[in-house]
Length: 57
Image 1 (spheres, rainbow, N blue to C red):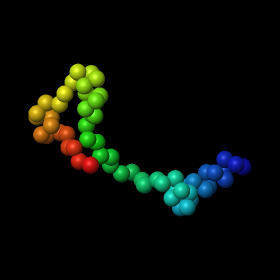
Image 2: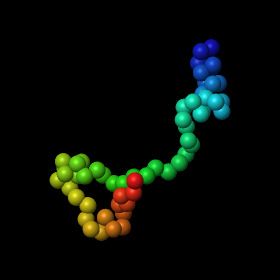
Image 3: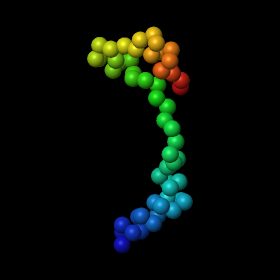
Image 4: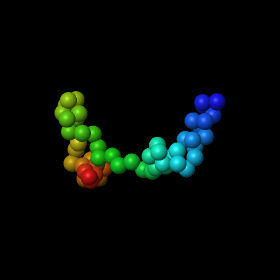
């Protein structure tokens, strides 16, 4: 009974708001962090920086 109650609540409008679920939205990815790149001895090339990686906040 507890499982049915929880399922009913979290699939209702108020339950979804309580979870903070925003739906299927695209993520922002600003590339691999600098500290991780340095840890593995890697770096972005100029081409990658210009064409692929966007450092937006």
